[in-house]
Image 1 (tube, rainbow, N blue to C red):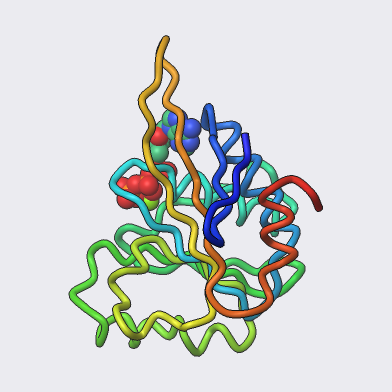
Image 2: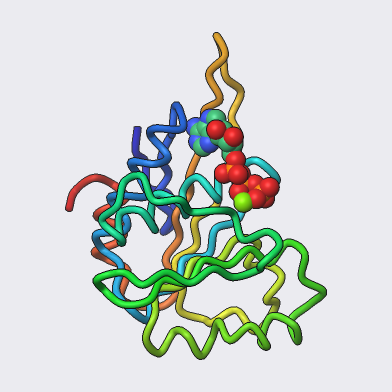
Length: 166
Ligand SMILES: Nc1ncnc2c1ncn2[C@@H]1O[C@H](COP(=O)(O)OP(=O)(O)OP(=O)(O)O)[C@@H](O)[C@H]1O
Ligand SMILES: [Mg+2]
């Protein structure tokens, strides 16, 4: 289910497989220099989505992609170049975030950031925001809503991929 309101593309993800499929579609549209900011509360599905993006970029559907909760950043060598997967939940604040080198990495890498709010004003202005939210489910289902908002230019391909048009 897809809807577009006020610049945001909204998508219902009925189950984990749908979230993973979204990641695979989005991966195909990402290029070095792209930053995807994955926001949403604990357990919203940010890591599920990031893992699917990394796996698709690696071309390895079963690749082990651990959550970088403790390492803060994990770096992968994909065909398209480096992929940085960051989880900033445990980070003190923007000065520490800068030391991780995420901004410099954008010169050559695709960067995926969970808890991008931790970057504060250091979050690069050009990024693709994807906000995940739990929706009420029934019969054991745990649907999520993804809301994708382009920040800055150059996200048309990615938004088309999210919507399934690419
Ligand atoms: N529709 C869905 N999409 C994504 N994950 C789902 C869905 N339904 C159930 N899940 C489950 O929800 C959990 C999401 O966990 P995940 O680690 O991706 O969250 P997170 O947003 O990264 O949280 P954290 O901030 O703690 O890192 C997983 O256990 C997954 O199996
Ligand atoms: Mg996570």
